[in-house]
Length: 620
Image 1 (cartoon, rainbow, N blue to C red):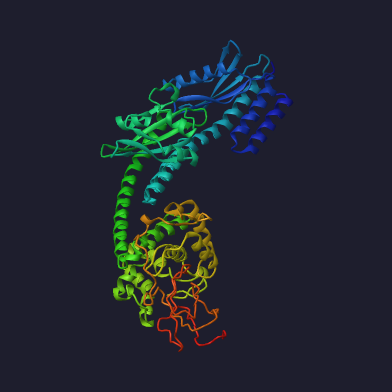
Image 2 (cartoon, rainbow, N blue to C red):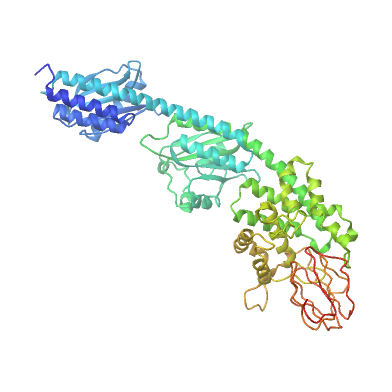
């Protein structure tokens, strides 16, 4: 057997070196190069590499060529045994019944062996070629496998640090749990993860967050586990972690969740989340990816994640409770404001419901939706500063009184401004009477210069005003009001908000309305129980004036088209000496007194102004 390398062998090794350098950190490509070099040098197929996972205390083949599965599994088990027992691992040659003579070469430093190269021994193999091959393989694989293991540990540490950052980044419970489980899924190298929380009232576990497929999550959220049921229930009841490599072999596994969701659970780890020795929930990771099953290192990692999550969950819950107290207080305040007028009872609650539905349809962030929720409840808070004699005045408002009414958005903004928590809700309160075409108040803003919250609440506010009873008319039907919204889209209302409202109505809001008996076009009206009052509006009287007040003089034999027309449009019927009940009435409805032959000055004038000329038969 020659002790020198042939030119052919030199060329093969040189080309392999160049290729390995060219592939950089691509371990898979390097293994392919070494596998081909082994076959070319020794004319015998058989090259594999084993890698030891310190966390799992398990060895697995990361490259297989020419050896039977049984042979590699046996060698992997032997390598693991030597590592666990801390026995020396050296280069050796053994004889396998199937593979014949094979070489075993350790990878790594003498005190830190983390892999093994296995290649077939050939009777006519050049010893120098064997030595060169081993040096090239151990050098290249040793460098890159070592870096890979280090990288894995760094990723785990980075993930735990990321959890720490998540814990301090938000007080929103859902956002917090979603971020934690996203990180856990990544660091645990699993398919999905879930969070169960304990319902103390029923002593049950319920799915709070499911990472992954939203359809699966929606189905799982319908499931509640009695304490002790399933692996998660056992974990919570016993306040102890549980690791199951194969769920089919564990009788504690609850199969109902898989049947409900269509998900197939193969393996899992559950760890309890404890606050002062009291279990408040369970973290669960499912279906380890790759060849290495869940192991003790994974269990410890998940316990570390759970420990960090618990304090954050408790802080988030305390914050939620404070938020609920704030919201309840504001709801009481809104109810008190609505109570100033019996016909606006429940108005703020409904405006809030409609506004939030629009915001959700627009895809706004949870924070933006929360701001709109508060602004909806508080949009009329400024009416606290308006005298009841004006708000509940049964007769026509004077110009001065109407001017006072128009100050309520600004009054509301001043009331809220000193409260830091409510500062970012002010735009919706201040600008909910702005019109998209600039005719509104208090600042006559137009288009997208109007804050989005103001544009949203404007649609919701007017929809509720039109669909509920008023002293001067019965609530209008849905189809009628939708027609008004579409007609005034781009004029009074933001077209985008109108479109979002119509979509939200179909999906969420329509449940608060009921079909109108005898309607041929499936029209609907607000359910009586949803109204602030079920009283029928009184017959329209001359001194009952809507807001904003409108004065229309008559003695006109022809209907006059008003070129400068406020919202809503106004019809002035003439030559009628008796009061007429307006069956189809715009919002707000208008009473036009007749038998007046002299031009009347409009004392109570809306914005924009209206010119109703009298004693004129032709339009001026």
